[in-house]
Amino acid sequence: MPRVTVTRRLRFNAAHRVHNPALSDAENAKLFGKCNNPNWHGHNYTLDVSVEGDIDEKTGYVCDLSKLKTIVEKEIVDVVDHKNFNLDVPFMREVIQTSENIVTAFWKILAPKVKPGKLARLVLWETENNYVEYTGR
Ligand code: NI
Image 1: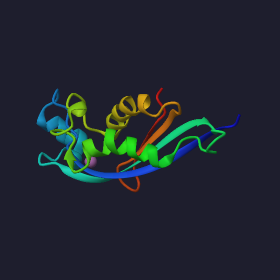
Image 2 (image 1 turned 90 degrees about the vertical axis):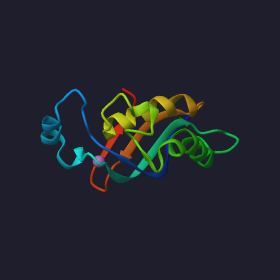
Image 3 (image 1 turned 90 degrees about the horizontal axis):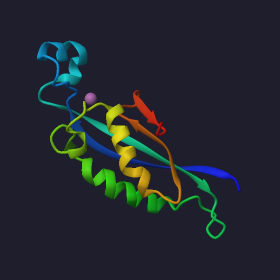
Image 4 (image 1 turned 135 degrees about the horizontal axis):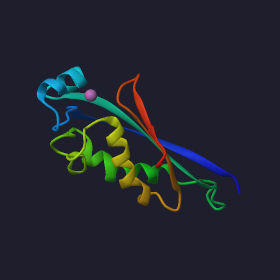
């Protein structure tokens, strides 16, 4: 049975400030520059959610992408869209609010929700030019 990876793209926007509370304000400013702006800044994020699995004989699908969309909207988009990652998103409070930490937090939430498919890859675009990718390792 061929294994195929299917991907659904979703979008949300959110604010954050990249800040390490263990460091001084001066060190944070030097390390993170504009991303450390005390009054936040925003991004239009794009999230690509990829699920791998066998092709179902009845449907010809690996998974129904509209169902995957509904799951990701409920578990992720509804929680973070139009929110501040530092203040409003409980699972991001204890880590530095970078895309790397956001994408791994998303993984923990989504991995158990996409069965019987297997979460294969998350790609989080922070800008047109910057993205992070995580495959659960
Ligand atoms: Ni930023």
